[in-house]
Image (cartoon, rainbow, N blue to C red; front, side, top):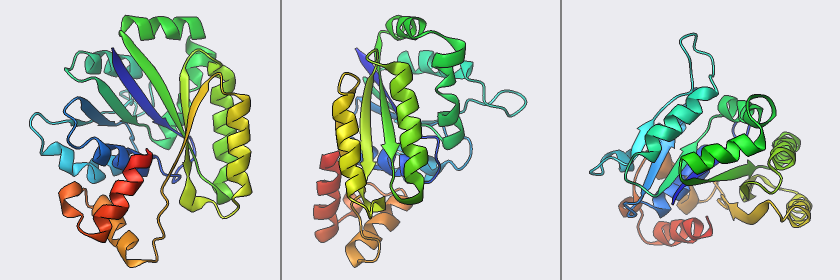
Length: 236
């Protein structure tokens, strides 16, 4: 059965593309994985995942959910999912931009019922997994509000994985707060994972982040950088 991993968060700049890059590095040598940049605004993943574009066959695509008026059309998501499901891969990772993520809950609350959305999953012969990214600091309230909205809509019908962007949390009590919340809603939040534990003021981390921004694959990381990046991608 194919699996679609949706990287979601309506708040911008919280680490969606960063997480997608880490997942891509983790799966660089996995020919069953395929990555999609659905962000119509900044296209960060298109830059950071350049190392996948050189694969044969290519394991990366840049798609969009925009209609002829340059407005987000939620229905285009299903057309793209259908096209992707016909490709010979088992895992698809979709990086949604903030605008696309903001529209996503409307699929459940306005366009379809949960039962109908489950039927779409069945028609695709696939499993849909919603990766919700949460950052700390000034982004925390917006991120957790989005998480709660998805949890309340999805309930136990779809799997949610909570990804915590560690480097953005100065107040570690908030991470514990998220852990407690996930336990309360463990019927739908199947896992809690941490990522992004980088100090961008130190030499190895600064170099790693620069190489990620430039879209370099694992072969570009050496010595301490390789130890650090392998440790990080093992967490996701």
